[in-house]
Image 1 (spheres, helix red, strand yellow):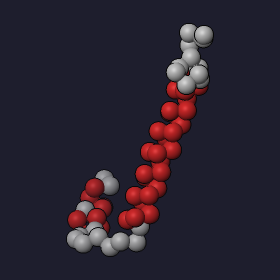
Image 2 (cartoon, rainbow, N blue to C red; image 1 turned 90 degrees about the vertical axis):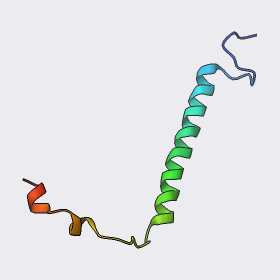
Image 3 (cartoon, rainbow, N blue to C red; image 1 turned 180 degrees about the vertical axis):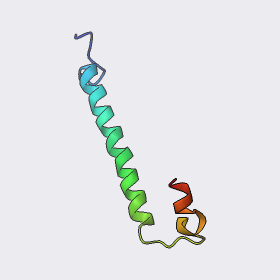
Length: 59
């Protein structure tokens, strides 16, 4: 028996890489899904142009 194998029979490094890739897919998938859910929705309230004085803050 390989001392570096998990209970699935996969080496620990390979398992860790697959877990990392899976977590990255879920993270970026949630970012894309959130963008698609909120894309095109109007925001109630003032816009940044109305709140911020751009010439003053750019100095």
